[in-house]
Amino acid sequence: MALYDNLFEPIQVGPITIPNRIVRSAHGTLLGGEALIAYHEARAKGGVGMSTLEASSVHPGMPIGMPLFSDQRQS
Image 1: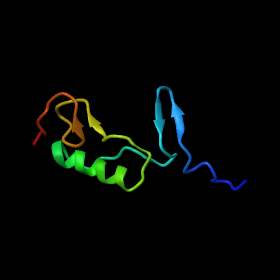
Image 2 (image 1 turned 90 degrees about the horizontal axis):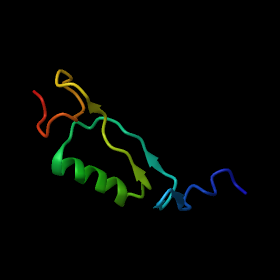
Image 3 (image 1 turned 180 degrees about the horizontal axis):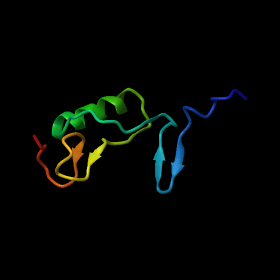
Image 4 (image 1 turned 135 degrees about the vertical axis):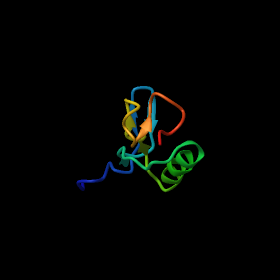
């Protein structure tokens, strides 16, 4: 058995079946709305089994990351 034989096999995580074990970790794209949706759709179509979302700002004074406190990007 090769080291990475399971890479393209589905895995069950609780009630969710992930189609493979390729995971794209979270990072900030500075996108939002439809652009963010399109970004993650492209990764899914490319074969990523699970794509985690953006880095998040938890305070209005943080100018980077997806804001958790508002639907609008802070300038």
